[in-house]
Image (cartoon, rainbow, N blue to C red; front, side, top):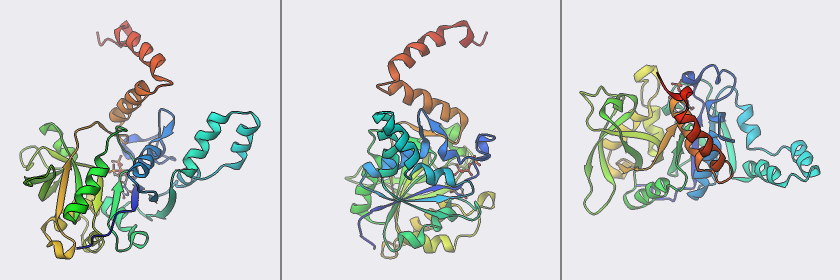
Amino acid sequence: MSSNRVTKAVIPAAGLGTRFLPATKATPKEMLPVVDRPAIQYVVEEAVDAGLDDVLIITGRNKSSLEDHFDRNPMLERTLFTKNDHDRLASVMAAAELAKVHYVRQGEPRGLGHAVLCADMHVGEEPFAVLLGDDLIDTGNYVLEQMLAVREEFGGSVLCLMEVHESQIHLYGCAAVTPVIGSEAVKVKDLVEKPDTESAPSNLAVIGRYVLDPAVFDVLRNTPPGRGDEIQLTDALKTLAQMPASEGGGVHGVIFKGRRYDTGDKQSYLQATVRLASARGDLGPDFRAWLREFVVSAEFRDD
Ligand code: UTP
């Protein structure tokens, strides 16, 4: 069993984002703004808050806006400095100073499993975290820290699970679990990618946070394309769940109770924008007042 500490976060951001076309024709969906920051900045902040400041972003085509966002922009910084616009200057520099951000290119979007495999040279023989770049969870939620603690205790890999309505389970990977005596974590026995309601082993959906044992790389190399002809991370996790701990196998789950948004989905993106804007100290009061008026207005009603 590999027992090293987790220091690296991998953020896949090379998907085609077809559900958000045409906005994602020339811009990665991870760069769509949620209030005033691209979605992926929240994700990098979450990794850094959990102590992971070595970040590898898996990029696809249109990667330059991502790289520019996490880099310095001397001309813009000089202009803001000259105008004494220190708040905006600080916000621009913060993105560049958040973490040590590295990039690797996924030549073709061959699935999330393939994207994770692109991280093998950077990660090496250490356990690592994976955070999906379009998956936001409410700030102030410590699920990644909990997952890291479960990895320390049990080794192997750790998933983030969320209860969803049975009618929604076909949109997710789904886990069959058993309780672990004396722990809030559960043991993952099996996984099924996007099952029908009838064949789903539970209502526990796998969401976009993972702590993975480096054994996943060899498993992924031997995982044939699955659903949608893509190399599925779920298929590799299913194999890991059945492998012995001595070979880096074993999968646990942490059940997440907070709010989570898939910003690659238009409905969920809009919900994230409204919730996060409402909660902001600077924008929230005016925005909430406007929203209250709007929802009682004639314009808002269906009839
Ligand atoms: P999604 O399945 O949500 O991404 O992948 P997608 O394929 O871009 O979505 P749609 O259905 O076409 O809208 C989850 C995460 O995995 C990344 C995505 O960028 C996203 O962060 N991903 C997916 C890759 O990095 N590479 C891939 O080949 C596929």
